[in-house]
Image (cartoon, rainbow, N blue to C red; front, side, top):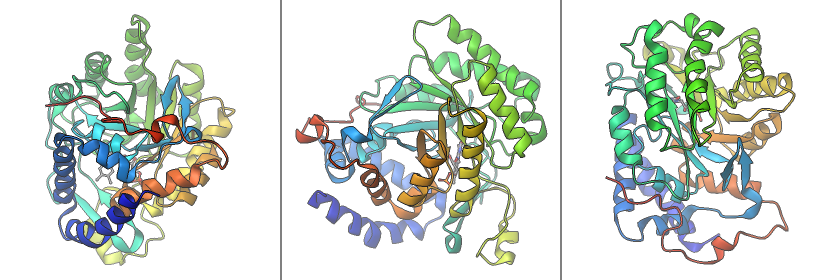
Length: 375
Ligand SMILES: Cc1cc2nc3c(=O)[nH]c(=O)nc-3n(C[C@H](O)[C@H](O)[C@H](O)COP(=O)(O)O)c2cc1C
């Protein structure tokens, strides 16, 4: 392990994390994003991040839905909503970054407070309502490319868009982002305003997906399309979504978003009630997210890509998720609780002994995960 990493992680845990923990979640998140942007602006900043944090090894590389990943661990949607720091997250060691959720027009989300820590459970509750700066800002950030890190776009309709117009919102995002990202995730899981029953129906899902398939058919480049689902689907609903995967040109499933359930929490029940509605993420979600991935994997005969997300807090959680059938995994709450040391720990736990490290890791390229400078 490089000595810079041995200094960086204790410094993060003893100095930076207590400061961030004392701030409201969204303010702490904004400070982290701005700090990463600052690092990216300093010459050699991303290179240094990579040196301190990233693990490069041939045995970590994966090819999934036709895209080459330098490792299977991604940054989940919500971490880089507007596509501001995918280069820096790539330099930190993520194999891919899912930006968004993006909507066509900017939206401010739900009233605050809307994100809460449950430290006794290593969890968060959020009802942010998909705040983001919209399509145009994301394109401004993406325009200069993202060499060295796979970038996916998580897309959804605006909260104000009526359900019958939702497919138009999805298509607008898809067409305009098509040339800028490596894959798409259609988010029918995280919208806490829309009628959940409706977005779970096959009619709604097909109405959203079909125009995307039609548009893609006319393009020279192929962009995989995945569907992100809620862990609160019934087994029957999971099977129906899996059957869409089998029957249509859908490329994969991202499972799962946070849950609305609250069973088995260590946090005081009064506190849980006071926090109120929202999606619970982190350790209480691990078992459910893994069970959903296993069900999709088994029903689809193990033939379709799955990105496993939800409660990935330790290398053992990631191993269990991969064993259940995930091809890739994403971190969100685990990263916010444990810091970038978790990513390193996970990558190192996945190394295959005896396989050589990648040649790139032996040299010191000027900027290994440089996606190009951005505005
Ligand atoms: C504060 C917060 C914001 C999130 N924002 C989004 C989002 O914009 N779009 C999305 O698809 N998922 C979003 N998520 C869900 C995560 O991407 C992930 O699916 C979920 O939290 C489960 O993973 P975890 O337990 O590792 O956090 C958000 C999660 C949190 C905690």
